[in-house]
Length: 144
Image (cartoon, rainbow, N blue to C red; front, side, top):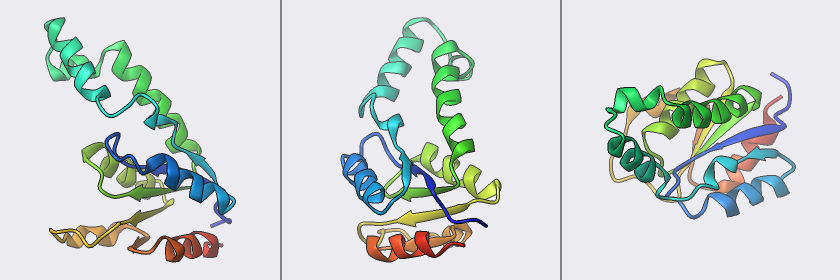
C-alpha cells in the first residue's frame, strides 16, 4: 500500500472533539475529510422528525432525497480516502463506515480517549487500536 495521504475521519456528530482532532491530523500532513460534522449534533433527530411529519417510515426515509444526498456526499469521500480513522466514541454509522473502509482493503484505525467500559474482540478487524494519538500518528506515517 502506498503512503497514506488522505484520511476520512469517522466519528459521532455528538463528539465535540472531531474538529480539533481533524486539525491535529492535518498538522501531521494528512488531507482530512471531516466536513460531515458541519450540520451539528442534532441533525439525525431533525431528519427523523421531518420524515415522520411527512408520514414516512424509516425504510422509506432512507430512500428520500435528503438521506440519499447526505449518503452520497459521505460515500464519495469514503471512496476517495486512502484510510479511515474512527475517533471513539462513535455510533452505528461510524462503525459501518469503518467496516466499509476495511472492506475496501484500506487501513482503518480506531483511537479511544480512554479504555471502553465494554470490550469487543471484533475490533481486531481494525488495522490498529490506539489510546495515544502520537502512536496513531506514527502508525499512519509508517504505512508504506
